[in-house]
Image (tube, rainbow, N blue to C red; front, side, top):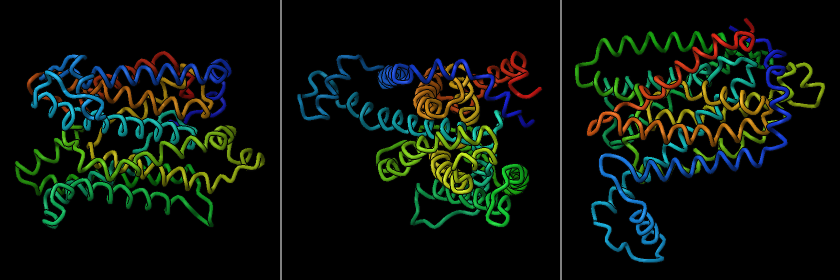
Amino acid sequence: MVANDASMTAAGTPASAYGLSRGPLILGLLFAVLIVSVLVAVANGAFPVSGGKLISIALEVLSLGDRGDVSASEYAVVTQIRVPRVFLGILVGANLAIGGAVMQGMFRNPLADPGLIGVSGGAAVAAIAVTVMGAPAVLGVYALPSAAFLGAIVATSLVYVIGTRGGTTVVATMLLAGIAINALAQSVTGVFVFLSDELQLRSFLFWTLGSLGGAGWPTLVPLIPVLLLPLVTLPLFARGLNAILLGERDARYLGVNTQRLKLLAICLTALGVGIATALSGIIGFVGIVIPHVVRLAFGPDHRLLLPASVLAGAAFMVLADLAARLVVQPAELPIGVVTAAIGAPFFLWLILHRRSYFGG
C-alpha cells in the first residue's frame, strides 16, 4: 500500500517545474473557477435567483444601494441559507483537500488522507454517542458538532502518542496506530448503532453521509477564524514537506526540524478537518482525490500543491453541494453520496492507469 517516495517525486518532476513557474497563473485560474462556482451555487437551487437580483442583494448587503425588485423571500434565501451554506462548503472543502495533501506528503503515501490519523473515526464515535446517550440541554444544536470535534481531537491525539517514542514520531508506526484506532472506533460505533432506536439511527446515518444543510451564520461565524487557521499556516510548511519527500533523514540533513513539522502539521490538520467534519459530517474522497488531481496536473511541489489544493477543494465542494441540491429536487442528496460518486470512479481509473504511481 505504501508508495515509493522516489516514484512519487519522479512522477511529477516535469509537471512540477512547469507548474511552479506558472504558479500565479494557475492559482489565479483556480480562484476564478472558485468564484464562478460560488456565483452559480448561490443563484441556483429549488428557488432560482437571477444574476441581476444577486447584484441587487449584494448592493443591499454592502449598503451601496437598495434591493430593488428583490422579494423578501429571495433576499432571505440568498443571505440566510445559500451564502452561509456555500461559505461552509468553501471552508470544508479547502480544509479536507489541504489536509489530504499534507498527510500524503508527510506519510509519503498517495493513499493517505486525514482519516488515517483518526479524525473521522473519533468524530463518528462521539457523534453516535451523543445521539444515543444524549447531551446537556445547554449545548442545544451545538451538541453533535461539539462532540464530533472533541472525538476527532481525542482520537488524533491518541494516534500521535502511540506513534511517538523517545520524542520522535515514527510515521510508519503512526500509520499503523491510525488504522488500529479507526478499527476500534468502527467497533464502538457499531455497538452504539446496535443500541440506537430508529430515529437516532436515522439521525446518525444522515450525519455520516455528510451535508451542508445545517449551515447558518450563528454556528459558522464563531468558527471561521479557526477554520481559516490551517488554510493560512499549512502552506508555510511547503519546503519542509518537499524535503520529507526525500526521506526524513535527508530532510534533517537539509535543516528541517521534522519532529516539529510533523507535530504542527498533525495538529493543524486535525483542527481544520475535525471542525469541518463536525459541521458537515463525514465527506469522503475529497482529501484523497483533490490532492491527486492537483499533483498530477501541476506536480508534487508543495509550494504550489497546497494553495492549489485549497482552491480546488473549495470549488469542488461548492459544486458537489450544488449537485446534491439539484439532482433530486425538491429533496436533497447527502453530499457524501455525490463526492463518492465522483471520487470513486476517478480513483479506480487512477489505480488502473497509473499503477507505477502507487508503487505497483
